View 1 (cartoon, rainbow, N blue to C red):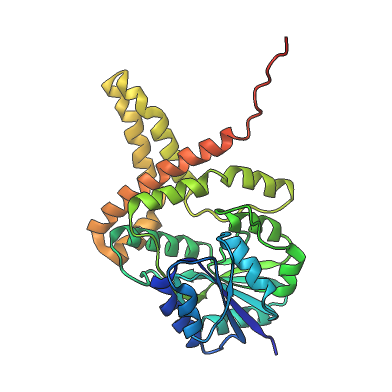
View 2: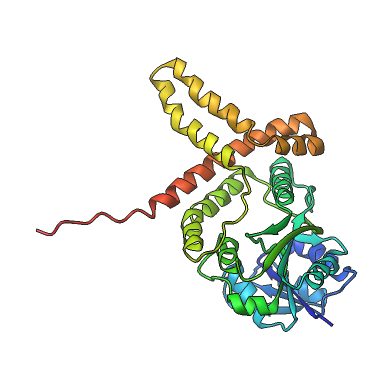
Length: 326
């Protein structure tokens, strides 16, 4: 019988860890071992995990999610490792369904799930933006994929051994880097039979800051994956929308030269709004027209930060100027 180790990396997650672990304990297929890796939390997260009967691995200092996942892998023995973020509460059949995908498809080495379109804890409109966008774009790519997000993902241990551990030097985009190494070693499947409610950031500035941190390394990581022969991860945002936003930002200064030139960025903004009509329908269906307008305003701000971060990351690839010796 296939054994399952469920690993929850955890850092100051007292707000969400209780519903996360309660959902794990309510699974129709209970994991054979549940390990919470406490990444030097200061809010009692380790005590919450212990109170739920989980084995707790405590890290002496905060090393980031990659270090926590690596420690969890080293502390477990299951044939399948199910990685679960501490801010996700799984549906009761999530582990069972993930195992079914792996058992029915021997070439599939990694199966990942999707978020529900409602937050785990409702903290306001900014969080609803994040939740709906994540739920939508993941469902848009259901099936065999190249990229991997380890928030609710099961992977065979032999695949982990073959690919190696997570890059502990990365605090962001560690999943992008790992997906680049994972590509080509096995089939990676994204399925909506593995689902969970997610609690996300609830204020706009932290959302934009995270987008910046994740955008800056994307171009270098994509080039590294390409050199290794790995595929590119699935896009969270439509390339046409990213391009339209970039052109709107690039042409906006032209309006200072003549008011008539304002038509250029306005045209590109219209193209941005029309780049993903299915997303608009999805948001409208779940939250109505007023929220859809708010959603698109935040979506534009996120794209502006994304474009700026991609540009900054690309500039880092330029060779440093050489100083002439006298």
